Length: 182
Image 1 (cartoon, rainbow, N blue to C red):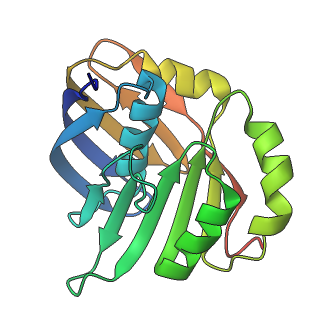
Image 2: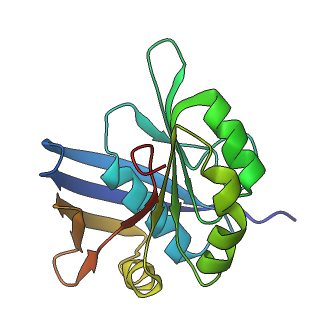
């Protein structure tokens, strides 16, 4: 018998001082049985970093040709494709052909190994941004995971403060690759 996804509800407030974006979102996240709390919370962080009324979660780990999040325009064209983790560089290159902008939010123990192997192939992608999360920070973020969450994300000068009212985490994403750096 196949295991079903676990449903999480997240009411988030985003105050992105860097972009001048302030909004509240009520989100439903389906966590695949093989997905960790850490990965799910990094997906939620990705949503907050690029928050937009048109940004939506993809179908998840079980679908190869969809990102973790994407933003489409009114014609259905993909404006932004966001993957988390350490995706196969072939899939990232394919995404760069399908979307105006591609973002990889990478984290985890094998991050350095993944980046060393993928960097040379991905640096040629003009529309790609790769952002690294420190191992400790993504693990701390995972500790905020609950089936029903109320979180506040404050983004200022590249730092992200996340709080649930009881506990707080400071995330300092580091850009490894962006169109301006390539």
